[in-house]
Image (cartoon, rainbow, N blue to C red):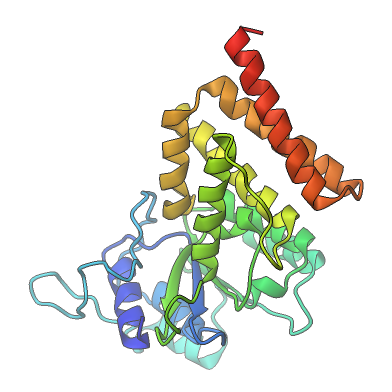
Length: 307
């Protein structure tokens, strides 16, 4: 979406007290979305309410009806005021509760571990904005470490993440995406679309339909996405809190939870875990995918026989 509309969505989320704990900023042009500083300043601005958004509603959906700023009937959805002490400290570069994590060579796990220590203390202003730039360049270990902080957010901490490429599905699914610019070519696929596509194929795989690797696709990423899908399906089946999971993924997960029994869901999860172990042992990806399909088929056959 255009930057002005993207800003209005951020304003709306924060000023109505519905800001998600973790936001992913992307740009359809392939460049880094430049709204990370605006979002951080908006969160830290002392002129507004800050109640974490915990539902499944995607406040940044492109087709969402809301498309205005400063509407008299809907309240004040303006951006950062620029006049409060917090805004002035942010502009001066010395706000104690603003943390910027970046490394042009890629963020390593040591930096994320250091971040965990920084997050252990309470923010001086009552809330904290953490910006993670180019999460797509982070090492796998660093992304997994960040996942823990994003999965178990403190009520006063907000993560703003930027990316220009694919991320681990487990981390990506915990972020609510705000897509900037909007000048993408027809049919272009963004990272969020990729996650949803992987999830849909994961559901087809669970039904026993043939699934194959597409050109340039990595099986470990596909398995991560499927593991996240069926974990979410089990959470939905047991009615556990799923507010931090990507809404598009959660929609597919709910379909899985309705169509598959609990033993079936557990059997699929076990097949995914076995496939991951085979892959770590340098097994052929195509054969590993066939092996997983066979395991799921065997589990279905045993279930039908009451074994």
